[in-house]
Amino acid sequence: MKSSFVIVALLNAFSLQAQSVSPVNQNPPPLDPKNMDTAVKPQDDFYLYANGGWLKRNPVPPEYARWGSFSELEEKNNEALHKIAEKTANAHLDANTAPEVQKVGDYYASGMDEKTIEATRTKPLEDELKRIDSIKDRADLLSAIARLHTIGVAAFFEFGSGQDAKDSTRDIAQAQQGGLGLPDRDYYTKTDEDSKKKRAAYIDHVTKMLTLL
Image (cartoon, rainbow, N blue to C red):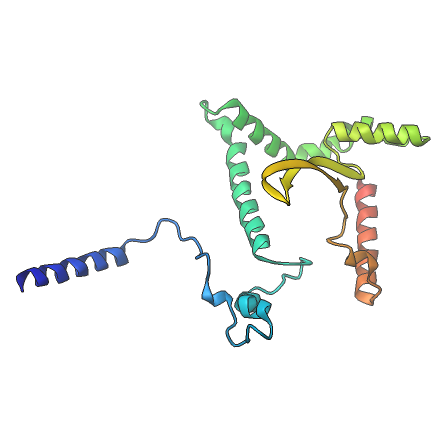
């Protein structure tokens, strides 16, 4: 009887201790029932059955063309990277800062230095703009494209390496288009009035950006 009382007392003590200690890192569970919509029969719409709860709580933000759990992950990752960049920008205040950390901090700080950017305007780009302006034929165009790729500008297309979709244990060479200014293909092809307004606004924006140069 006495040992039973001791066991109960110990269990209560551990329970109270567990309640008072905050978890160090609360990661979302791998399978959260709240993300499901059990009101939907899986045989009718398995996608809504499995994801309906999440979809109801996470409408697509107005500034995005699409939204999903990977979008959330990207936003959190960008926030973490921003904090790291802000910290490294002040790395020069610590004499023990590693040179590679200092380089990252200096690079980020230079991009945030609006006063210097406004003062120098397009001067750092003048040589590249002259090369583009001097294009007269196909050979010049190819030469200019090659030059841009050597300085990290993926003009028209991009080469790189990435995970093989058929074998995740290896990376393979990949080629991609240079990218679209608008979020996806539909923004260019839809003929409704809202899409037309967005394309017109985009053209105005690009014109303004190039004029500012």
